[in-house]
Length: 301
Image (cartoon, rainbow, N blue to C red; front, side, top):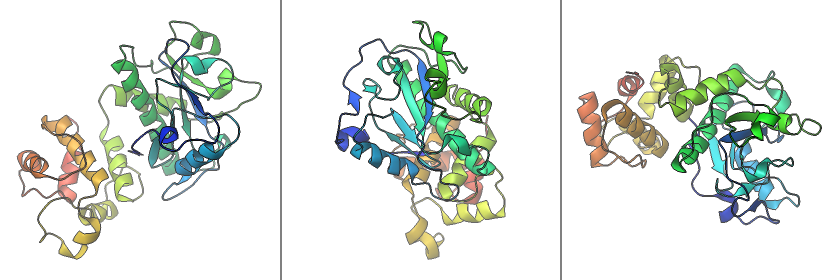
């Protein structure tokens, strides 16, 4: 799962020209417009594209922004959902939410399957973040389906539309090979609160920096042991200074303990006494989370 960066980027980093409108001129609807930023595509390893595009938007002299911007391993909120992002020139800015992947629309067929999965997962995660906000406003989560331009313009609209479908004479993103079926399936799993073991394994693999293929084999197990969590300084002391207590991993573990065991935790990325007790209670171990412990947390019930 991609790491969600703190804050609202275009509020914390004032753009050279206005890139959003404060407030909405029309009632927001559960409609999400899907984009790609046409920023080049990072094909393997750490992906800096979202950060690069955010910096470009801050300094650009023309209008163009999204609510959420993501790449294979991170998500940046550029604009509050309660404000209008300048994502689409056909009228949807007033009532839709815009999400964008920092990549090229033409690259879906030329990237590896693992990178494709990472980007699809990020798109689904961005959509679920937007859905959570809509629900918090008393609206429904967008339906896990594609809608046409005419459908999206209706007051009763609910679903997803590509930027190309909103503006076919000028835009082609997120590309004709965008994996709509996989994206909508993954989004539905996230908004329903259920993920498969394969999806959970891929999230965990991305956090520990190995190939996100869903197979927790010897390489992944070794990386999980290196990325141990806990407060016992005698455990794996040779790598403790480098790998102990990664906040993103702690947050993942905390969320899984909440989902699996109803642990009363705040997923704050801090391995404190409450998290240690929750680990001991669920895993019946010393409070250390390493290879076998992580695998236990992958189980769905």
